[in-house]
Image 1: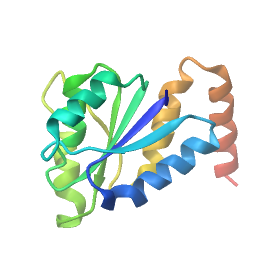
Image 2: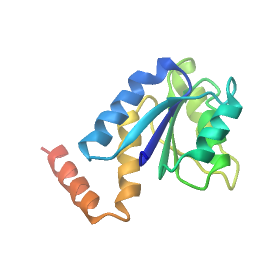
Image 3: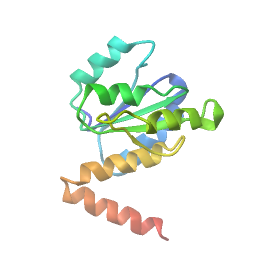
Length: 145
């Protein structure tokens, strides 16, 4: 059971997902990547969310970027959206993720920023883990150098 499930809208999003996987790995957080589309495979996506025991979802999508919102509508667990620069320099995806209706939040990071999505997931998981909190503090200290 991965603690973080990374859902990508298409295979072309794997490069961004790889940055998230690398960062999660540095903190020893289990994760997996699954390709599922809010538009092309909505039934598969719904089953995936319903059957997952992940504590946090990271959803990576471009264009209309409906993926994180659809996931958020199917769970009460945190969803982090990563907009992808496909067209309009990624602004279309960014605005789509940021303008979720009241009651269905999606935490949104910068365009193509899988690393920050992973760090936000680590922060969420660290709320119940003193070990992760310490690792985050150490990571931040190293980042200042």
